[in-house]
Image (cartoon, rainbow, N blue to C red; front, side, top):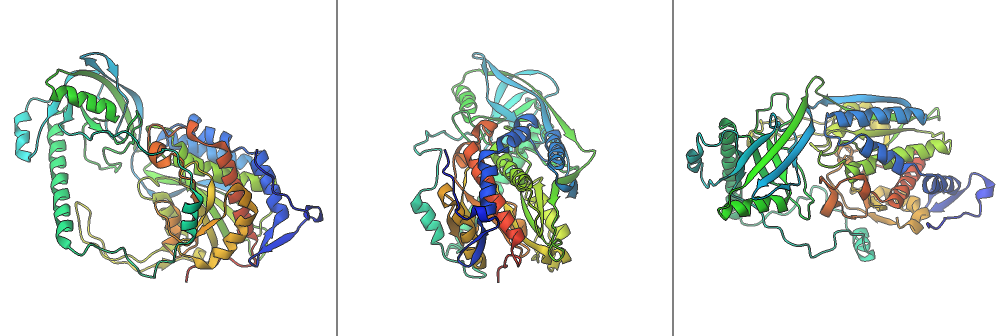
Length: 531
């Protein structure tokens, strides 16, 4: 049972404690804790996002179901201005309608796998011997011409699986948190050091380009031969596999072959048999659908309107990305973060909070393809950062240098808070180099010391939607979360399901987020920005 944090002055109503000169409303904190820890709806919210809505690949029916549910739920809890807001053009949606695959010779064995995202199906059940394609150079491909039509193909390459020798589920130690807190600010304009010798780097780049060219040549040959299905080895082990896309989501994407991403154990089993001269037969039935009627991407937006005549036009934002990959139901990535942020809004509504500033939640789409939802929203509402000219590379078009664009709403945002590192509880906050908020955040964390949240680090963290804000000079923050088995077992994998969520951690996170959002909305001034 979680220890309750009590305050002797609660009977006085509105009361404040001061930590490092930053006010903390202890009476409201207690109300937030009671609602968040004792009356939580976080797991029910997560259930609807995962089990009920299903996988939420960008622009898929699953994401649409989840977005419609979120709009309905936010309206029911009393949020205002709830809507789906387009951020720009994305492309085609895609989903798996049917999937079955098994080896039938030398014996029957159903394999663990998933179609790669945005690849076509098999056009019905196919039965074929599995053909091992060996090709070290493009000229080696000629010997397969006219021999692969309708066949199931596997390339003569595989990665050996090693047994794990380290714990898969991790929580931060006191020493690790102390090291985070001791980090020093990075010098302005500092860049990662480069190796002194350019030769190895150039050689590596050249090898990669040759590898890309070989892979493209193989895929082109397999498509021209009209194969039935291509097998590739997925990263992972112990039946867990980490999925990816096998084709582009663009409306004008080039056609590709049907492709199955196979768990390492099953893939290597097939490969060993073929390398040993044994005959392998397999059957597969894959049906996938594409959705291109509406190529736009959408974010879910909802608000608790501000009430202070002078401050109501200013905004405090919180959010997380709502889309996922398709092999699981995207529980830790990122139904967990989305559920926490929705629950934080529910907590604030449940305690009948009337904020000075407007509080706005955003559930982003297409984060997995490049933070598209948050970047599009930031560009529309707040502005864009300056960009340098870039030459064409590997099919990517050249770009021109552009100056920064700052919009009027830029001045109105106080802060954006993000959660997107799995189910683990909050242990603190990354400051993104913004030393001016250190004492403020330390004060706001103090009431949650008993819940394990007390670490402030000046360090940056990447790969999440707070970067869209930080990139245009706005205070955008990601919380420090326990690693758990996010990187070892659930992130982008077939095991990213509701079962991997830790209820107490989600309750703790939602409670802390709600308190941070409350105090940000009530400050006399907006949060300070980086110098």
